[in-house]
Length: 155
Ligand code: IDP
Ligand code: MG
Image 1: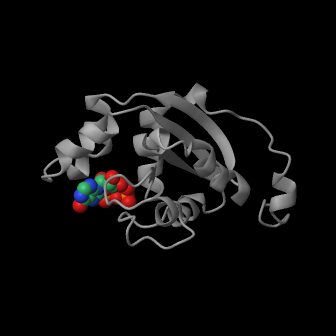
Image 2 (image 1 turned 135 degrees about the vertical axis):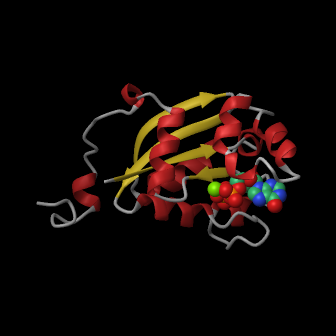
């Protein structure tokens, strides 16, 4: 099954939206594999937002992302990278569709509540950036058998 990294950003922490946001993924049927409450440092932000370091707004991203801790999590499910991106909504929360996290709770391009890996390569890299292999929990989620059909589970 696919895995993806989610960060609940400092704006969501400040606004008391941790449970609301995490619930979107739980109720969809994704499996929580790893969870951490942590403050990001400069080195981590430089790597995580390397594609934006030359942008004029990069210092604002840095200030924002270090303004409070984040919740880092890893979720698992069939096609979960795309599922989580769709649940998050597009980057600009003002234009994000109602029903998405950004569309329902955000009004900012930058303070958009959540990060989600944007593809398989990014997911693999980002999970390794935030978690040691032994921090990824291996367990049977009993509702998996109810959520998926047998052929989807490969047997
Ligand atoms: P994504 O989070 O939807 O994948 P990216 O383009 O990867 O969007 O940008 C990473 C983060 O950088 C965004 O979530 C947002 O917080 C911030 N960001 C992106 N574009 C802008 C911008 O034009 N102005 C301010 N902040 C931005
Ligand atoms: Mg991105």
